[in-house]
Image (cartoon, rainbow, N blue to C red; front, side, top):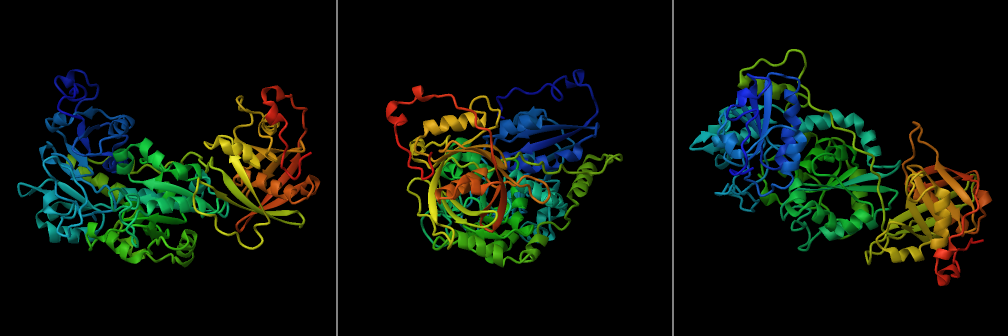
Length: 623
C-alpha cells in the first residue's frame, strides 16, 4: 500500500499481456480508503459478477489513519491488489470509491464516488497535506462529501459521477458546490436495499442471535470519535462518561431472560484502537452476556432483529429508525452535523437517553410508545429509489465504461447472509430469584441477573417473583473462587464432547469437585440440559418446542434454576414430574422433567483433598 510495494505484473503491469488468459477486458478499480468505505464497495461488487468482459482490481490509498484491517479485507475479496503508486499509473475504464481520501485526482479513468454511509451528514475538517480528517465542532466546517473542499480539484470536479441516494442531498450539493452538481447521479442506496430485502428474515436473524421467545433484543450502536456514544464525551445530561454506566446497566439491570444485548461499533473504533483492546473494554459486559458484532458483517442483521437501538448520530442508528425500529439517543453532537441533513433531523426527533433513572424503564417506554410511522419522513429520505439501486448503479457503471449491460442476468445485490447461531454466554456469576406456585403442572418463576464485581445493586423483583435466591456460576468463569460458593455450577458443551462429557459423568464429577453446590447442570443443547441433584438424581430438562416446531431458545440454565428453586422450597422431585412450567418475564416455557438411569459413578475422591471431601453441603435438599 506504499510506493515501496512490489508492483503487479499480472493482470496489469509490464508485459502483462504475455501472461494473462483473458485479454481485452474492461478494467474496474475499487479504491479503498479504510474498512468503513470498503463495506460499501463490497455491496456493489456483485454488480460485475458473471461478466467475463470485466477484470476487477483493488487498491488502498494509504491516506486514512485507519489502515488496520484493510489487508485482511482485501485478501477476503480475492481481487488483484495494486499498490497505490501503480494504481495511479495504470489506465482504468472505471474507478469506484466510497470516500474522498487520497489523491483521487491522479486516477486515470472515470471516477465514481459513492457515500459509505447514509448520505452526507457530518462536518469534517478539510483535508490536510496527509489527508487526515477528524470531526470538529466548528459550524463553518464543510460538510463531508458536499463541499468544494472535498469535491473539487483545481476548480474542477474530482468525480465523473457523484452518486447520491436522495434529492435532498442534491439540493444541498447545489447550494454548497454548484460546480459539482452536474456530476450528481441519483442511484439509491445499496446498503439500505440489502436491509429492505432481508426484512422478511427478521425471525431467522433473531434466532441466530439467540433471542428467545419473549426476549427483547437491545442493540448498542456507536459511531467513532470522542463525541460518539462509545467516545463518552457526548452525554446529553452529564459531563462525565455515559458509557460505563450504560454497559453496567445493560447487563445487570435488564433481566437476562427478558433482554438480549449486542453491540454494533464503527469499524474505526475496532481498527483504530485494536480489536483486542475493544474486547477488553467490553469484557465485563461480554462476560455478562453482551455480544459484540464483528465490524464487517452482521450489523445489518442485528438492526433488522432489534426491538430497540441505543445509538448516536451514526448511519447505523439512522438505518434502524428508517426501518421502524425504536431508537434512543445516548449521544448526539448536533455541532458535528449539517443541520439540514436527515441525520440531524433524527437528533431533533428521537428520545434521549438519560443517566438518571432506570435504563430498563427508558427502553420499555421507547418501545411501548413507538409509533410505526414515527420516522416515516426520515425513512423516505434514506433513498428515493428503494429496491432499485442495483439496476441504477449497474446502468451507470456500464454507461461510463461504454459497455452494454449483461443481457442474460439482472443486476442483483448479495442477500444478507444468515449469521451463525450465537446465543448469549454468561460466564459471570448470575444471581437468580425464584418463586414457586403449586399448580398443575407446577410453575416456577425465574428472574436472573448477571453480577459483575461491585456493580450496581440488583433491581427489586416484582411481587411474587422473589421467594428465594441462589447463585449460578459457569464452570468456565474467570472468577474461579466463586465456584466453591455457587449453588449451581453449569457446564456448556456437546453431549459427546470427549473432554468433559458425557453429561452423566461430568455431573457426577462436578458434585464431588464442588461440594457446596446443591445442583449441577450440563447444557448440551439450545433447549435442554442434564442436571444432577445433591441427592444423586440424574434428570433431563427439555423445553417443549415453539408452536412452529423450532427449539425454545431460552437459556437452559434457567430451567436448572427453576428445578433448584422447586427443590429448595421443600417440594420433592417427584412432584415436578413429568413437567413444570418455567416463567421468565411474560413467557411460559413448558419443560419436561425426565428421570434418567443413574449409573454408579466412579469414585474420584482420591483426587480431592481430604478437607474438601469432608466439607458439608449447605443444600437444603441434599441426600
